[in-house]
Length: 331
Ligand SMILES: Nc1ncnc2c1ncn2[C@@H]1O[C@H](COP(=O)(O)OP(=O)(O)OP(=O)(O)O)[C@@H](O)[C@H]1O
Ligand SMILES: [Mg+2]
Image (tube, rainbow, N blue to C red; front, side, top):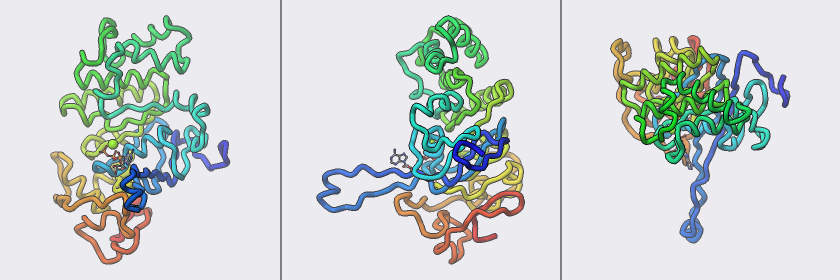
């Protein structure tokens, strides 16, 4: 049991239950004059999963399916609309900013865009030392300096590079600086939102390998976000496939890669670049429905090559099948 009486499995660092997030679209004078109704974007629609200690759990799906919103809500950059978030057994769903302070130190985020996420006016040394001092991970600047140099060394920089500014580094190097900054507070959990998507393929593996080495060295757990299954294949233990703010399939990596059950997972896998492709390519056609008007039936129905009439009228629930959870009327 934890602070609000929710059951907690001590194997998990993070437990997300029925998480919901919405946005209200900007409502201007014209909208008011024309009496247009306020529009709600249903970005995350009851997502549940857990991240075990020391594990990489991935969320995968196309652009706009709600991956970043899920991650940002979990680290409480956004207030959850409903659902529960347990972090290290503590219910943080309604924590105030002050209550979140010690939690923030333990859950850090790595961002997709290494160009936009580092302050261009700060030297690398300040970028890494600032969170350390803010969260009192170092008693004074002297200690922070020593720790900063050690972190930069771990992510592959020489001490004299600490005096440079972000623009003097390449994308891959900047992402390694972002990783050093995330590690500065000595976290146990990292939410990595498409950490390699902006990088050249040749650099992606380098950054992924670094993240996996750090996991072992610092005993980290990751929530890893990607839009491409091939990126997570070699790093993740378990994964959830997201579509229109819903998880449509979730389970162990090997189960899902060897035999994807949901037609959407099959389509994603068919387009993932890999040499040993076992799935017949079913190219995705059609548009993703608007998250403002969620379909009453299966969220994937409008693009599903195996659609049946029930799919238009009934939303399938996740159920356990063949060692994973899948939400599809085919099964
Ligand atoms: N601040 C916001 N205000 C309104 N709508 C938003 C806001 N942030 C996200 N959305 C909408 O919520 C949905 C989910 O967006 P989100 O950024 O979480 O998707 P994503 O899976 O991370 O996509 P990508 O792969 O492009 O990063 C989208 O329809 C998006 O337009
Ligand atoms: Mg995103």
